[in-house]
Amino acid sequence: MQAFSIPSDSMQNTLQQGDRVLVDKLTPWFGSEPERGEVVVFHDPTKWLAGEPTAEPNAVQTFLSWIGLMPSAEEKDLIKRVIGVGGDTVECKGTGPVKVNGKALNESDYVYAGNTPCTVDDMGGQFKVKVPKGFIWVMGDHRQNSRDSRYNQDDKYHGMVPVDEVVGRAIVKAWPINRWGTLPVPDTFDQDGLNTQSSASTALTVAPQGLALAGAVPVVLWRRRRIAPEETR
Image (tube, rainbow, N blue to C red; front, side, top):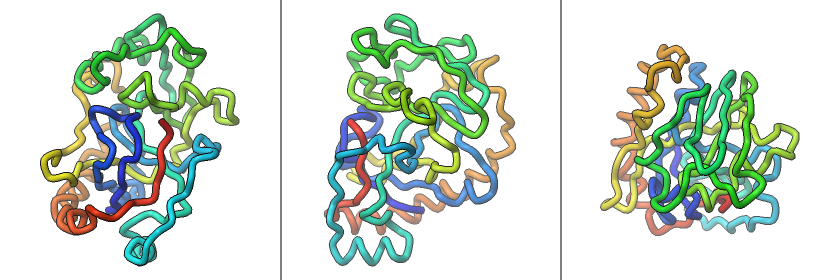
């Protein structure tokens, strides 16, 4: 497990500024790959965070980074929701809905209130992309306040995130305590004809989620510490 702090509004209302999340870093070691609907942390693939300041770590952060419980201050990581995986076609037309392999997503459970799933007032809001194998397409839940795959289509990966750059899946909101909760995959990603991936990785995710409950106590103790990763807005 590793703890991350949310520095921006791009995942509202699922995640708020100041929330602490626990990320399962174990499952990918066993060959599991990100799936649609998961909230994942990933290393900045092609300088999406260029120009963002790097926080100065204190002694506690430095120690916890050294033993692997926190990311290092030099790392620049982002957190977004996986919308498409390798082989998927993802598209936005008009104000939405977002479609994956021709199936409309019902995103009302997590897209920020007042936002439309797709945007029509900028160059990134209208698109149709095919996600290559080994990559994912990610979007923030606050659609009108998230610089995600849509706005990085001119980079060398065309806005896609290499699976190799994924740190892990965020599975628990651990702090503040009044926002405690898990981060499940929304039901819309389980609809017929959409999710064609094998479910073989399901069993592997159970144990790390259980570990998150045990790991929450240390996160509470760290609640006043600034955690290093930054995210685009």
